[in-house]
Image (tube, rainbow, N blue to C red):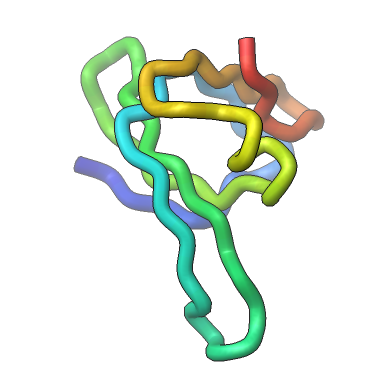
Length: 73
């Protein structure tokens, strides 16, 4: 299982949300994460914005295109 909190601007992927979490990693800011199961079976844990985190649920499909933020599909 690959874990990466950093989604690079040029990355592209699509997959299904398997787990959602949030935490105050630095003690002052809230960070939102989603674990995504990709089509090839790999899992990645990515940091996403609060608005998207509140709009998705486990089982939703997310798509990340190069140069754009992840979106619910």
